[in-house]
Amino acid sequence: MLLSRRMRHDQHPRLALTAAVTAALVAMGLFAAPAATAGTTTEEITVPATIQYLHGQDPVDPGHCSALVFVQWADVPGTVSARAYYTFKGQERSESAAPPFSDTTDWVVTYTVSPGNHWILVGKSWVDGPTVATCEDKAELYKTLITNPVRVVLTVERDNSKCEAAQTLVTKLQGKVKSLKSRMKAASGKRKDALRDALRTRKKQLAKAKLAEQRAC
Image 1 (cartoon, rainbow, N blue to C red):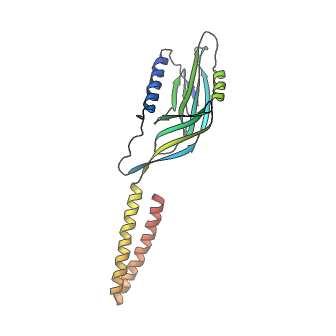
Image 2: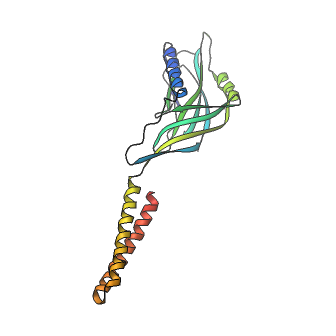
Image 3: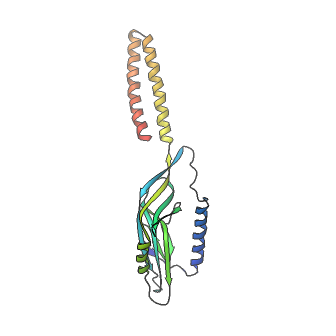
């Protein structure tokens, strides 16, 4: 996690308004994941998560600091949205977000998630006064307010094109095997031997195709 750059005091109202608008959209059900594209499907999966309690001080204004709380989870390829569930004062709460999530958050200083992980912001506060402040006390307070259990439900987009291609090949080869078996019954002599060789080859191809189908699907 990296901290950098001071946030101007006049940014507070704008960021607060943005957060309020996002919360309203979530509450009304207007915050939705992108629709799946052709050849893809979406599914929901639940992944383990941790709570990160962070605080930082403005490097040029020792009386200006912030404390933030994030729910963190490991990256899952294809994720199009996430909802973090956490406990606030004993009650389950949740926050939703879409990429790039809260991975880089400016609030007095810049908070950046470690590579391979993502964040959703679930708590924030700040101090801007005449005396030195680090906001460490606020981070400690958050540890009593925002607690486990915590989890993240991801909406993940899966590419089905390889699976569909593998299934098509299996169906095609099954048809060829069936046809060769039928032709063998009516054949004799060298013709039957040739068809038997062709059937053996098609069966090997079908076996490989079924393995490819299992891997792709």
